[in-house]
Length: 116
Image (cartoon, rainbow, N blue to C red):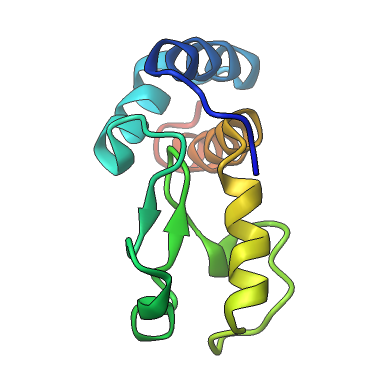
């Protein structure tokens, strides 16, 4: 499992990664606040026994990237089972990695909407 991060550490990583991707730091930070209140180990749903029921809205980490749409996901559209979900969630708890995934997604959306 990824190493625990304090709120201050998450904010520092978020701001640095936003700068690296050329997006407004407040945008990446606001998304993290809205999705998890900046909790590095946030999980939806809270109980893994509900994953199949929530699929494809099973997500983790600060930015709550859905497992189904994570760049490293190796399943299809149907619920892949607990092993694949847990494998991806462990990656999503890595704040550095998750910040880059979120920033890349936000950068693409900004480019489409605002031409940034």
